Length: 142
Image 1 (cartoon, rainbow, N blue to C red):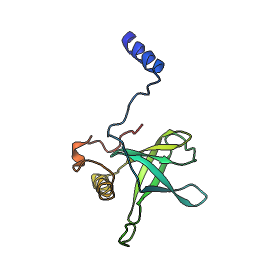
Image 2: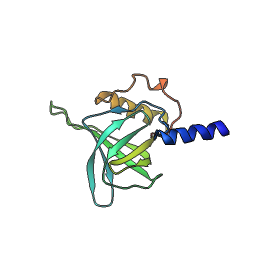
Image 3: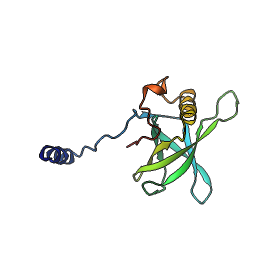
Image 4: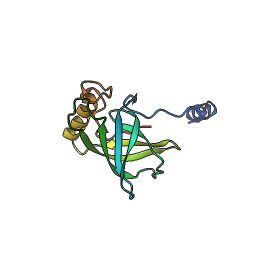
């Protein structure tokens, strides 16, 4: 117990937040998130994404644990093809003045794999085989 407390104090002194992500976070361009906030739906920039969550740049101050449906949309393709979207359930895990972090909640394996496929097809750098990641269906991102 004494050693654990000493490590916590040392981390606080160095202002080092503990790393709780279970999947590597990647910066991403061209990915927007839409969610309903009572005043209409609007697209917000996704600054980074992982197989387990994302950070959305938004002025909204959501409470930790807030459950929401996020609709992700990639930038429209240059060839005029239709815009592809995918809806994902999520929980707010972190808030800052720049936005909020979410963890994805996948009710089944098929939805998790569909979302991973969407990320790969639209330029988010994720592993080809999502099975190589943690097999739990809901994991934190912070």
